[in-house]
Image (cartoon, rainbow, N blue to C red; front, top):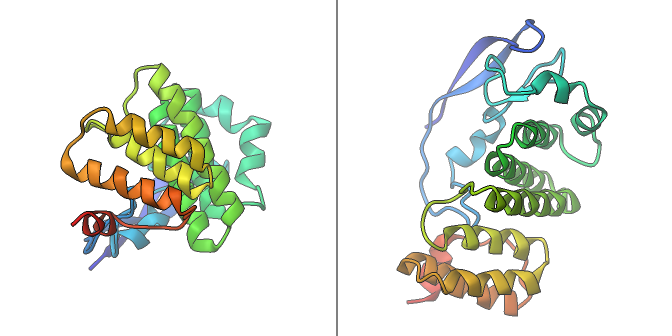
Length: 221
């Protein structure tokens, strides 16, 4: 089961106090999605992965901690527009604002993951176009991460496997297939090989839907 705590937080940016929900404990039973999204019950805790100050709009996993250049970024037009963008669910906007903060701090790997989480929120809310934008934003941010030598996954071929899923879900089949082949050339472990080969089948079928790691493994038996 999932236990939820209510905690008062002092915003590191504006100093005002607000109450937020935090995860006390949770669990995950089943297979993660191909983009690493966990199964239930952890899957449904996503609303507690990010906090937004209701006074100044500062968004972070813990608003009591400061992020480099946060004050400058939060005051920017780009940040404020994202915070209230009606094209995205409110929770997705919080993740995308955090993504901006991470990007300006030079953490492109973390910024990419924040955009992925925003995509998951959009999926749940049925915001298909917004989810696509979030995935493509994550791809762009992770390209910058690679240029800076930042890793967003550890195992050989794992970064390619995640990128492939983001691109496939966004309908970018040609590029997804190319990156799939790049990942296979790295001689990854068997599970990642199975995932990349399964992705190739999905791409060839123009399948942009959600699939799990268990499906990929079962498909290679």
